[in-house]
Length: 221
Image 1 (cartoon, rainbow, N blue to C red):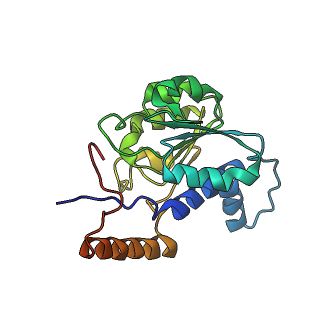
Image 2 (image 1 turned 90 degrees about the horizontal axis):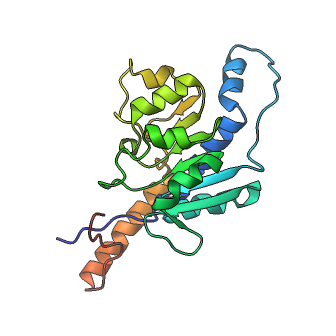
């Protein structure tokens, strides 16, 4: 059995969600939506994305797609991956990069090394007022440690994935201040669906034609 992943099919959709979540947080769109629902014209000053530092943790194809979409927002992008390469720092440098980032985007795959990587120490290294964005998997974040930091009001979070998933109706993450939660919908778009089907068809044609399959998984993932 040859196992392949679908690298690339969710890049556009997930990257869009990441940028949308960042903008929604920085421009206080959740607050204004609630005020609109109560028919209140509640003017207030907001933050903005321009001039911010964005750290992408797990710089693969989705990370590249996020950076392309951030190109017009006047931000500084820093990148971390398991293996260093030109412009991409190794994960060993992550502790030193976290304190300077205004936005930390988690896009790493699930491996024995990444499960629980966003723990109390990781969160404590983030600067005051920083935003954590998780569009990877919920198991990468230690939920209890995140809830503790949110309750302190020191950081904020935008989460498309959680641990556990789905969240039970009484889970403390629902009521934590400064968090936006969406139910694992970042890649739930017509574009992802169409690209997934096209990829499966292309793989089947490669297999029937005796050609090398794409995205063959070796090692941990």
